[in-house]
Length: 424
RNA sequence: GGAGAGAUGGCAGAGCGGUUGAAUGCACCGGUCUUGAAAACCGGCAUGGGUGCAAGCCCAUCCAGGGUUCGAAUCCCUGUCUCUCCGCCA
Image (cartoon, rainbow, N blue to C red; front, side, top):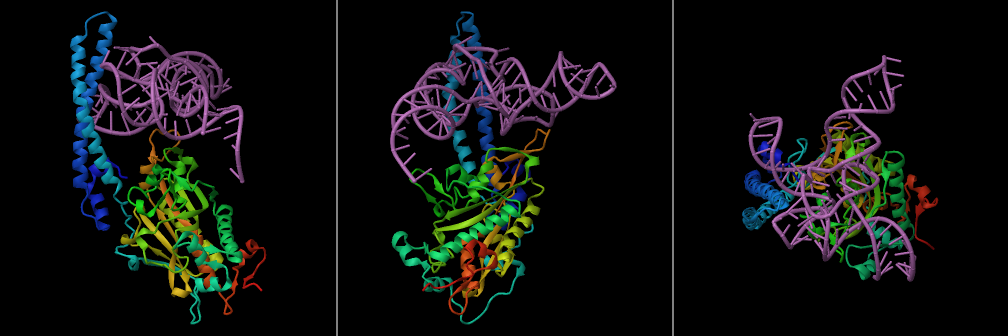
C-alpha cells in the first residue's frame, strides 16, 4: 500500500519506481480517482454536517415543546440524498484501494536493472563447489538408501509431496533444530511457535493477497495456510503502535509452509526442490525506518552463517529489478550449490519491504514522548529453507558408496550418527 | 457442542436515545510552589480523514458490519474476540 499524500506530492517518484518494474505510469489514474473520491467525501461531509446541526436543533425545539416539522423535513431531504453519495464514495474508495493494493513496492536505488533470474548480480561466493562425474542427485541417493519415498507420498497426496524415513527424516528435523538454535542463541532472534492458518487480513497485510491468491491454499472455513511463517511472524505487530525503544524485534519460527506452485507447472518436478509442503526456518525483523537497510545486511549474514556452519558452498546475489518480489524493496538471495544440477539454487531470500507491509498492516512505532507515529519497516528472510537445505546436504555430503556423511554441526542432533547408510 | 456474561480513550472505569468525543481516577507532558524532590495546585493529553496559506472549521470512530430513528456509545440483527459453567477431546 502507498501513501496517497506522498503520491500527490511526488507522483514522478512512484511512476519511475513502477516503470523500473515494467509498469506504465500509474499515478494519473490514481490521482484522478483520488480527486473524485475526495470531492465526494467533501460533498458528503457537508451534508452530514448540516444534518447533525439540524438534528440538534430538533432536539432543542422538541425539548421546549415547539414544532420542528420544517427541520425534520430538511433532514428527510438530506437523508434521501445520502445513499447515492455513499454508494459513489464506496465505489471510488474501493476502486482506489484495489488499484493501490495490486501495485508492487517501489524498488530501492541499489537494485540492479534486469528482467529475469539471469540478470541477478553476484555479490560474493563461499566454499568450493563439488564437481565430479559420478555425482548422484538427492532422489537417487535417498531412494537407494530407502529413506526418500516419492511413490508412497504420491499415492496419498499426489505430486510434489514426499515421505522421508529413518535417518533422513531425522536429518530434516536436525537441520531445523540446528538453525533455530543458532538464530536464537547466537543471532539474537526470539523463537515463536505460530498458527499455520491465518485470516484473510494477515495474508493481505504481508502482501500474498489479493494478488497471489492462486498460489495459496484456503481451508473450508476460509482461513489460509501460511506459505511461509513470515506471514504469522510479521502479523504479530499488525495494528500496533510499538515503542521505538523496543525495536528492532527479531523473530524466528520453524514451520511447514504450503504453496500451490500454480505458476511452476513442469518446473523442478523431480525431487524435493519444489514441494507443496516444506519446512522452513524464517527470520523476521521489525525495525525503524533508519535501520532497515543495515538490518538487511545483518539478516543476510545470519542466513549465510547457517550454510557456512554446514559447510555448504553458496553464493549471494542481489536480485535484479525483474526478479524482486512484489512486496520487496531490495532482496538478496542465497543460493546453495547443488552438485547434481551443477549450479547454485536458491535456499534463502532476504528482503526489506520498507513500510510496504506496515502500511497494509497498520503497524507503527513511536519515540518516547513524541506524538507522531511512523510505519515500521519489515524484513523477512529464510534462515534457511529446510527442505532445500536437506537436498544440499544429501548431495554435497554424498560418498562414492551412496552413503551420506552427516555435517559435523549436525552430529549432536543425530544422536551421534556420523554417516547415514543403508541398513542391514 | 450446550448455557450464560461481556467488549468504552495508555490503563482502570462511568455513561437517561438529544451540546457525550465521551464523567471520574491513575499514568503521562508542561507550569506554579520548593535549595532539590515529594505533596499540593493550575493547565494539557485519542485516532483516521476532508478543507484551508494559517489559526481553525468540519466528518468519522465507544470491537466490526448492517438496521431502527429527525437524532445511537446507549435500541435491534449478524460477525469477531474474551470470560464463566457443562459436555467432548489430543
